[in-house]
Amino acid sequence: MVFNKRCLFFLLIFSCSLIAETKEEFIPLMTKEEKEVCYKNTEKAEQRYLIKVDTKIGFVDGCGRMIIEPIYDSALEFSEGLARVEKDNKFGFIDKSGEVAVDFYLDFAWFFSEGLAVAEINSSDKKVFYVDKLNNHYFENRFNQVSSFSKGLAFAENGAVLIDK
Image (tube, rainbow, N blue to C red):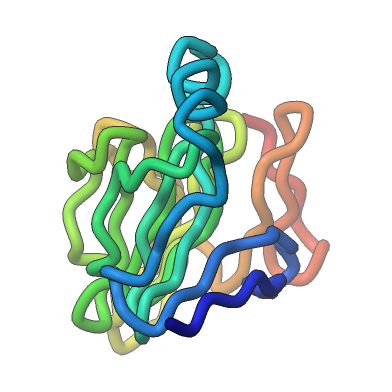
């Protein structure tokens, strides 16, 4: 059995993840007693960590239980309750149980910040916009580049425009 603990780098987000050659080889490194204590800890049960099995990404909880099967091509950590995931070259968002919150129709997406995520649908003009958790679009067809919101503000067009939420 090949079992390695490595750190994966997803863009600028660093997270320590577990890697196994096959799904069957993923075995949490805890005794039965440790697992029982862990399962009673609500905070640990709510945590989600990226796991890569073969070439696919999924999520385990803080106790090492597989919560979201590794079916995604790429993923970002959870932000504001949702994780950006990629499947078949399209991006969408899932909740902590693995349910799809925003369908897989986006050609680009980033994490949620202050209720909005940067997104793009491949079009001839390559305009970016923001999508919320209910799949509503904001500032469509207005900007070529935008940043995530922070303290109610975001930059657009390489800092030339300031967007007030």
